[in-house]
Length: 282
Image (cartoon, rainbow, N blue to C red):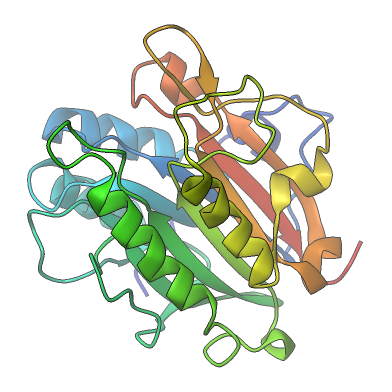
């Protein structure tokens, strides 16, 4: 592993929460942050890395990372800040998922791989002091332009659904929690406000996570809260970014929420999302 660079700011402030809302950081807790970095330019990638290294997250799941330009710049900047990096090889023209960790070890799980567009799906086991978790980072393509509208998105969703049906072997429940995190470009059924443009097949993709034994972590802790991670030109909000947790480990969740600072300051058009898991059930 590369050297660890500890943060110099209080965990509660770094996590984008009121001081009395963030759980205190302990040796037996894992904090994860997922964020769509919007295929950043090299200059914006450096600013993104500066923001990320100031957060208290142990693990990063970054999505829509460019294979060239700002993507390698972001990976290098995080590495130089003390993060261990895991990213797919090849496919420089494809957007990808990048996993990064500090104070934790990343063990790649190559058995989890989508048959279509492999670079936006990346799996690993993350070993931190007192806690190991299975982790899958996902970036589902957007609906696309007029010529190929929904084609790549639907094919990739089908490929991910096939992977979800086979998770018991690479991630047995006895080995600890499984987290799936990223920008899924899909809404939950009953999303507020409603967006009629989304089809039944897209809501079925959201339901596929439940069928695989995973639960929406945000909805588990916030059954009625309306919050959004992306906003359209009309100003309407969308909860596109998600974190799912294996259902039998939900009691370990101590925090799930969105951090809007990077969206409001122009670092990306997406808000970040954070989750904290305890080594044992609360």
